[in-house]
Image 1 (cartoon, rainbow, N blue to C red):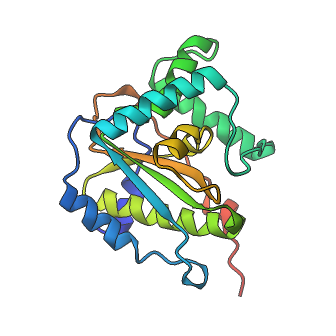
Image 2: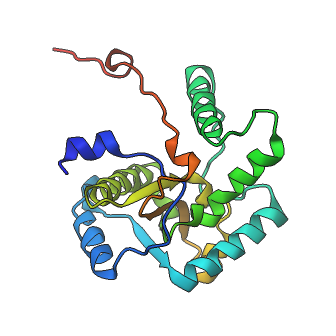
Length: 220
């Protein structure tokens, strides 16, 4: 698969087969992703790839933490409140997802159940947790985003699907405790990944993109 095909075919996957990616392939993908660019080549990403029993333990602890605390306590500022066209796009994305799942807008219980699947990693066999030193702030976040997209496309090239999840940075406590993260490092977000289960209704959801003219100005 070429890069253009990987970009066009990548989707946020929210249902996975219970088939792990081989360790050899994981190492190949994450080794290649080390070539991602970063400002001044600082390579701020410190990634934790969790699989198997350890992943299940983390899932259980995260689910319990979310249910007990309910209010997020992220290591980084996630306080943005979308407005205008950004809020419209947010609503459009949610509508596409919940419509694919057959969940009505007024069905708050089912929507909450669907939301909780974030912290169960959508039953993916693997999850990558992206962490970085807190002082790097915005510049580090830019680099982490570039790195994560590099990973995503490398996975897509090999038939591996994923879902980027800001939700996995909202309740960092269980991650920090399980992996004994030092105070100066923060959990920024995560990515669940594995082989897609195309029978899962959520995986039929599709979102639109704005016209080129809305996003890009060509000046000469």
